[in-house]
Length: 118
Image (cartoon, rainbow, N blue to C red; front, side, top):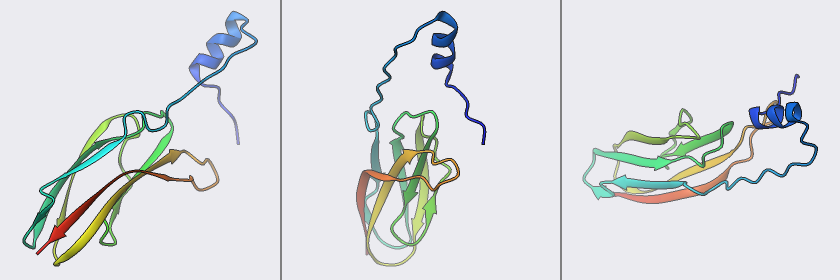
């Protein structure tokens, strides 16, 4: 596996910077909301949110009914629509983490909403 330097590290190396600290805020902009949060089946729910802002991150939205969406960008806001077909209470969870390379990414919860379907 070949390791690539981020652009800021490469620029610092070229400029002769020998000591550098990089700080990130994983959950600075992370959020999840759903509308409507309740209603009769089949219930079409629109989820909106934002990833944590990491350029090489992984974001997964678990709809709580056995279906997931792992196509969410970690650096942009998103909108997804999902249909709940059976009555019940569902907890949708947004998880995020750094890309794991050849190992699985370790994901942390960054947002959750409860959907109630009558």
